[in-house]
Length: 255
Image (cartoon, rainbow, N blue to C red; front, side, top):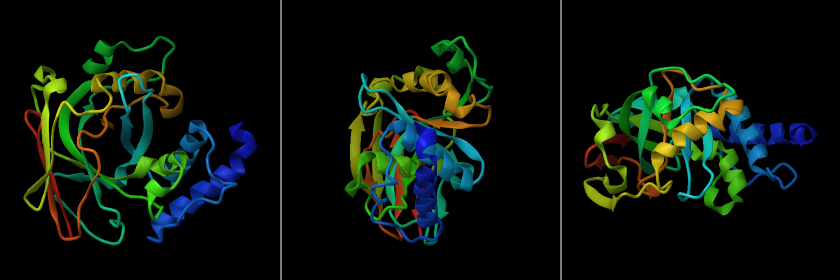
């Protein structure tokens, strides 16, 4: 099915990539080019990501405990250390999500036998609080079909990582509290709010069901596991901070 639509999907990827590269967002994809399945959206994601260089990791999340996770590549060029200043025309949309991410310390190559949860956990080097900064090649990604918004790298625009939390396996993620503040004002205050229901189920899914697409997970890649805070806009010139009760804090600044 992808082969029959390959040229159209590559055209869709080129439109979204050029919209991001030129900082000139488009209203929507032409109807003939828009993805009609998750596989087509993933094909577009991969084509866009290839244009931005090496992959630094993957974002994955699920809307509920029963929902099948969805995932997207994150370009390494968009990774930033704690309290980075994000400046320039690339940062237009400026919507933030507080998340928890894991840095892999061991390869998890594709294999016929599924990885157990324990094997995947053993491959984790560290756990970090992060802010995912959302951007898009679309003027308003909420105004288009969900598959089109997903095709645009699931709106990934930046990955800002805080310090590692050493004792992360002791955290009860179902009871972990998080706040997100913009310019010192708490915009979000939630507890146990990761929508996947069990964020640790996401990594084995990516290692197993995702292996055909990822080619296997690699040491040094980051896996971020979905928003705890929903979507919070931040104005130009602002300072934003996410604080988890145990997992730690991370911040960024916009020029």
